[in-house]
Image 1: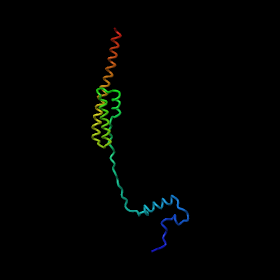
Image 2 (image 1 turned 135 degrees about the horizontal axis):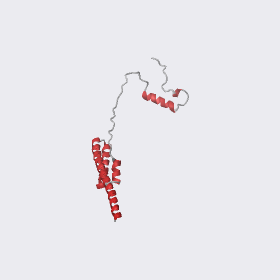
Image 3 (image 1 turned 180 degrees about the vertical axis):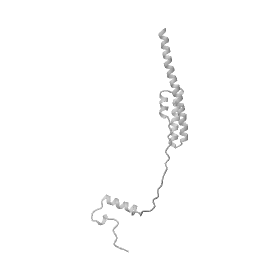
Image 4 (image 1 turned 45 degrees about the vertical axis):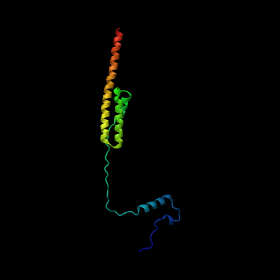
Length: 135
């Protein structure tokens, strides 16, 4: 057995105070150990499922709530949109899709009824203005 081996920590025997880089390198060597021989390399593959995108229609519901809200359909659609977003945050994709589908249906009906109301108001204003102009 050979008794003349090299010192493990070289910074203490050089006569200069060790720097941060030297101490860090010595720490890494002591923690990680000497380089291993080339052996069989094992790899691990982790398949991360991509999240299913569930549109919650919250902006559309908010628009219908603020501007076109016949029969409070916009407000109910907004409530279902928030429920859909909550279900999505919890990880319940099927529940989120169900609430989102209901919110979408309510938003479509709120939009259609709101447009009918606006068109009805415009047509009645035109008819009333022509009736008053004739008399």
